Length: 240
Image (cartoon, rainbow, N blue to C red):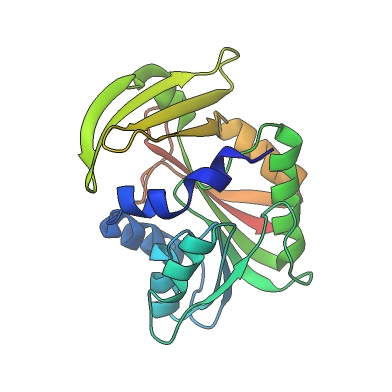
């Protein structure tokens, strides 16, 4: 059975989101740089998408590998910079790297929580811990589910790229996931996103269970403190 993210993160995604916010990417990388030494570091950009962050990480002096499941997004990432970025295609539940390969692993802009079963999310973090060097750093950047539960916008219509799109959001019946359905009115196609509603404490526990310890918590890219009202949950963890 094809997973939703296999269908969504392709050419349609690139057309609908041709210019993801570069300022957000710069702010995220600046936050990483403030917490970890990027110059000369080996960095895995896990679920790198079209390479917004990977390009900036390399400009900051890191040796970057972009990793993603989507070939169209990897192609965009590879050719985002010159010389081309190093990219690898694969599933984050089974990372094809030797143990203790990377100094830093970043997973940015809510590129986690996509799977139906929680053991799969645990598996991702176990894989991350395995490829990190001892003392290496994980940066996990997630949306804050506590705020979202109170402020969900259920329906909107807007132009995204060249498409007129109706967006509907809802929680699953068990309230474990938020679902975002996108209807492309110009060509009749539709896509759905499904992301797990992990609380900050749940994320911290999962990271700890995988053999990493959370050292810093932020509520946004400006390094503000994490509160229930924060838009993001950004966790800096160290491999034990």
